[in-house]
Length: 72
Length: 166
Image 1 (cartoon, rainbow over the protein chains, first blue to last red):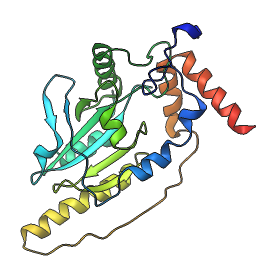
Image 2 (image 1 turned 30 degrees about the horizontal axis):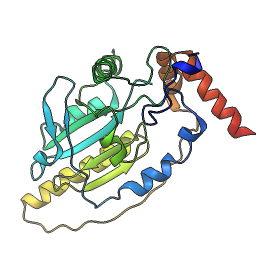
Image 3 (image 1 turned 90 degrees about the horizontal axis):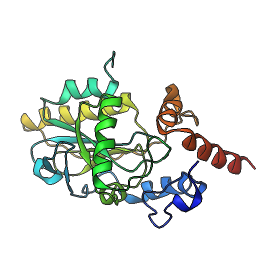
């Protein structure tokens, strides 16, 4: 267990410990975020190997599957 | 990785047929001693590479910015999955992966492409659905990811679970 002073609570996105507040409410945020039939928010992100990928570059060409994930 | 994951199977089936699959690496939802909260871009990149190796990810692995703008724009859940059609519209969204359901949505989009190629006019048919799944992650996934994270992930999860059952 990390000592309290080593936990940085100012970064709420990259939280240091899973807590009750993190386990509640996010499914509501997910349901409200976007609906089927709406435009997918565009973004540009790097691949893990450093190439840039822009979502809208596939428009008119390919259907896309987006899976979100992590190690833990 | 001895066996091909269901998602890698779908990827192999669809990648040359007008589809591309991405995995977007986001924050660690259950930080622990081995894999804690992201503190730098370099660390997040390294964790993303570990994730690709440990989960045998074959789709294109993207890494969200440190403060998670793409993750937050799509609803912030750790394991959500979307299918975006070639017009840039959301065709499907789910909190958890159901491979049979993904296969059905992908097959429909492929069929729509074939109909369109024949000059057939298509219209969207809207669906909403609730799936019931085990509250404890199925298939030992929870144990696997908490063990990877370290004891803190188990302890934090048990604290939340104990608080909820009061």
